[in-house]
Length: 224
Image (cartoon, rainbow, N blue to C red):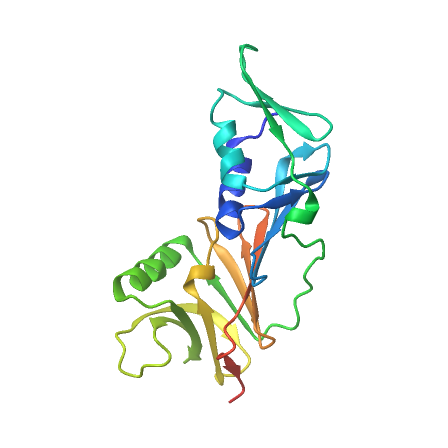
């Protein structure tokens, strides 16, 4: 079995969320952060034939790069990664699920009061502003039928602030949702974003079969 570049991009992205992963048979893979505040789920093009655990996902991805056009042959307790010539191969051993952080449950989103589209260019601007201004909070509010996305320090009223407005919908302007920018570990692309007053946000990629659930900061509020 060969993993295409799209699948490798997903694995690289998942490695930024959690270094270890438990992959189940089939095409669907998921990961959860060690703090359990970020969950991601994606569908691969390839069919995974067996369950296997990887303790260091970046190391596994690096092992794949050691051979050209890696071909994966799954064995009992390990996978052989061979190249096209058949002259070199890597024997990579799986990790026990007991040593991994994973979740097998699907997340059912509660009712969402705020919805908007977040395009890739806006995501890059927000992350750039966070880096430049030294803030880690993305503050989401509503005003005049627009969603206001601000990079600021919610604990400092005089902090330098970057704000960009996007189209969206909300049931009431009485909300202030706060998301840690460091948890915004999503693949580049355009996303449909839905946020619930239960302090969880869903980011669904518009072009790829991948989505993320990110917990909001407890200092967020709705209706007051």
